[in-house]
Structure formats: C-alpha cells, structure tokens
Image (cartoon, rainbow, N blue to C red; front, side, top):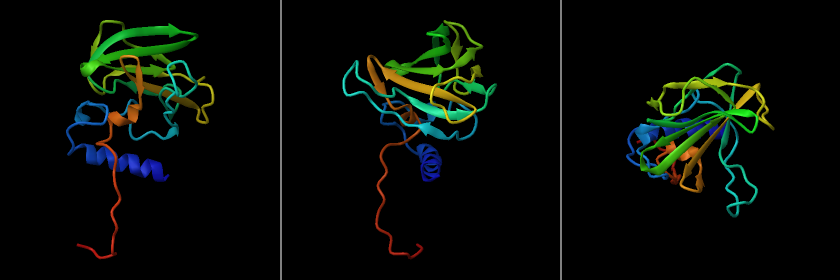
Length: 166
C-alpha cells in the first residue's frame, strides 16, 4: 500500500521533473497498463550478466487488459518467444522496453506513441499472484534497468517535519 502511494506521488512529481534516473524525459513515458497497477514483484538486478535476478517488474492486471506502449518508439519484435508473447520497443537514447506475456496487436517496424495499444495481457506469468501479470522490462544496451525509473524523477528524501502547516 505504501509503495503504491509513493509510486502515485512519484508520478505526480514527475510532471515537474525533466529527466529520470534512466536518462529519459519523464513526461515521455507512462504506465504500460491503465491507471496505477500494483507492482507485485520488484526489479532485482543480477549480480553479473548471466546471474539470477528479475530483469524487470511485474504489474498486476486482468487477462484481456490492453497493454500500452510506455513511450514513443519503434516496435523491433512482436511475437512468440520461449512459449509466450513478447513485444519489444526501441526508444530514443538507446532504451528498449519489453512487455510479456501479451498477444501483440503490433508488428515489427510499427511506430508507436506513449499510450498506444500494443497488445492484450495474457495469463501465465510464473509466480504471478494476480489473475495476470505484465512483466515490464527496460534495457540500455546490455544493461538491465528498473523500468519504474521511467516514471520517477529520482530518489526522494524525506525531510524532518515539525508538525506545523506552512
């Protein structure tokens, strides 16, 4: 609950920031599912290139929910991969977002804008506690990044508060 409130706050604060920790303009990206989906599994970077980790975040959803392009870019892959539907979109600045498991409604070469429908969420993401989960990933080159950085202005610091309003 607290994480969700903080993420909603970060989305509001992003409107006044110009660049996220990923290096992307924060107003250029949005959630890949409608509203503010619950993050049910966080990004866990691997200790090395081939190590274990969770190279993205899992967002709770419902089967059949529209999956949206997080930002403007070009679809570089749309189709089955290792038994599940995947869409990958290249964005400016060398960023690539990935979305799975989905049934693609786009094809490689299509140009999409933030919020354009790129597919439909399917069930079957292993370990998902919701009816369906979208695994949303972000890379720059070979480096995996936390896709939530696309939405946030950067680390927040809480300052002491004396209880007064002002």
